[in-house]
Image 1 (cartoon, rainbow, N blue to C red):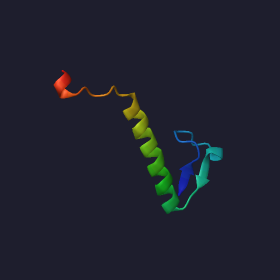
Image 2: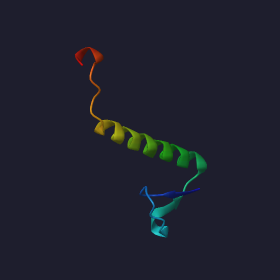
Image 3: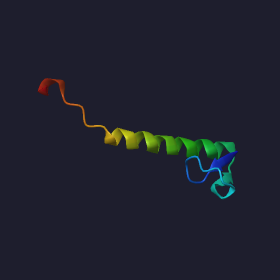
Image 4: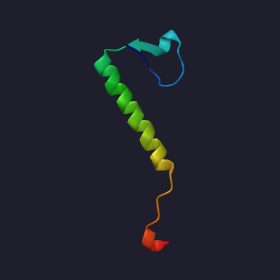
Length: 52
């Protein structure tokens, strides 16, 4: 599989690398989880229903 070294839409050859499918899946999962947690940290904490 071909993988982006730096995630995003930069498809230049110097930003691409060959990875085995298993390693690509692990790397993609890690990047997805990192992005998901970054969004979660931006959300304000939910208020407790008893404090409304």
